[in-house]
Length: 203
Image 1 (cartoon, rainbow, N blue to C red):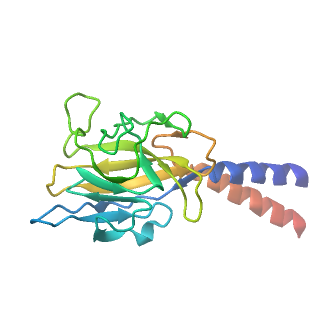
Image 2 (image 1 turned 90 degrees about the vertical axis):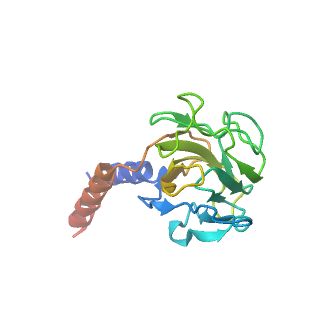
């Protein structure tokens, strides 16, 4: 019986660890208010509490949104999924249930780029003020291995209302992540109950 409980607990904890989720953040994206004003919001993927407003050219290892989300600066540690391999290629709008994986995702080089074709020419593009998903490949701090992830954002054309709502990435770089997937609370509850049974039987 002890072996069964321990095995159950291990499986539950392993499944819980697969997706790393930021929780709901709702971080506003700044707009440009004058000539030379390109302050953006730096998003720290694996430490959400460190996300902050910063000059657009700073903190380039991850991602910095500006102009309400029309522009973004990325480093080698954050590569958005694009329609073509260009720093100015349109960022792909994804739907819940789509998947992102390292082997098949198209990304451009790091650098100061823009979602220049991001807003709606078709239903496959982002709409101004629409909450939607983008995909990305991301290297956690201190590593160079890319992991697949998704981010839910509301983008604007340099008007108020741009928001980075939440994001998640897969802890296993070889696995695909399902857009919108977050750790299931039920799994955590089952793991907790399993741990309680283990401790009770040890008494």
